[in-house]
Image 1 (cartoon, rainbow, N blue to C red):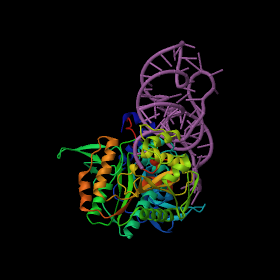
Image 2: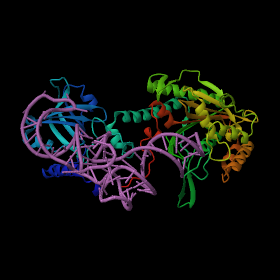
Image 3: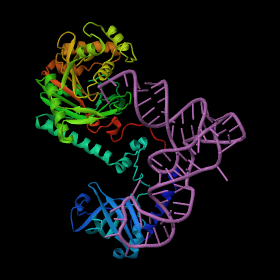
Image 4: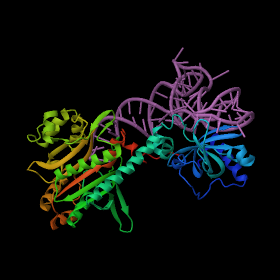
Length: 474
RNA sequence: GCCCCCAUAGCUCAGUUGGAAGAGCACCUGACUCUUAAUCAGGGUGUCCCAGGUUCGAGCCCUGGUGGGGGUACCA
């Protein structure tokens, strides 16, 4: 422990710790065999042996009431001088809010009707040396909530719910895909050539191979290699990394679901993502309607579809079929979107879309300009078979009919290379396509963002246990 | 990266015109054998984020920095 942090409150607890040790009792216990969890204990009327963290203490002389909490629930315990005797009762006096304790005794009802354990014996399992956040107002300091998430979890039921839902959502998504014959796979996160998306990668180094590696910005190119290899339906749920700005919607590492299905196209992916999200909403939220940040969201099908072209024309008077990139850039600038570089980027268009899509219920924007999607199959010369899904004004998913023509793929990579400079072409990916990849639909779904939506969270940091922060000075 | 906002006790927060650092909870001492935001009596436990500056005097004003939040840019 850092000396600067040893304040009066910690000193007090340390001296209690010493007191416990002096009485010959180990303040940090080991295995403790429970008969019930607290969620169960509240239901029984018998002798129980349970354990948990002391969340509240109400001492009145020769009796003490305490609230005990474990992962399943909470129960009141009753400690009395008469039952324990002076020595044991005084030992209990050395305990504080935050300590872990195991207790044994009969469950009874107090005068006020609360199920309570009449403690016949107790075991100190862990002495806490720091005070917990205040019980009534909880922990509000956002910085402490993220840096010391353990405190946030102790203090807030709501936060615990978010991460329970997160776990359930991912489990349900896996189940749903498994049931439909999709194979879960794991592809490299350390990649020699980062591909499958636009984005700046993190660079790292492998010492024995003496090679630079990148944390993946997407699993896409590896998943498509698996289609070449003969797996027809694959998915991966895991982290991707982008060395870019951090915001309420962006964390440097984020969780994405990518799904690929042979012999399908983006229309099939549209159906798939609709069904998946509706299934998740019905399982987790109990229906298709919920609110996100005060906005009513309704997932009832059919979900609105609008082409990229229509959106731009209606909302901003920009006719992408008539314009080249330069004039498109100009019009987007004048529509109030700030642009850093010289040319319009995919994300500038997305922002424009997000602005336009005032309707908060699901909207598929389909058929993007081909120059924005080098991995998508073209519908015609200008348009690619692609959609992006927006819900609640937030981009959630992205899908294409996957380009499986190796020669065109190389050309499209070359075009991009011109735009972005040093981009390296993944030759093995092209080679794989040259062996033949079945036509396929591919989908990427931002899991963190979906969880934000389902938990009504305004920031991605609320749904990531340990969001990225600058180092703390301790 | 740029712009705006925030930082006071363990936690949640007040702090007036620049004039002796406060409250509730937590904590400590004492009383109390069915309480539950226990109660009663007493106690303030502090690097006012950091470093400078202005001033007789700075939590407050100025400059720089650190950390966080929001927006914006790059991106998903």
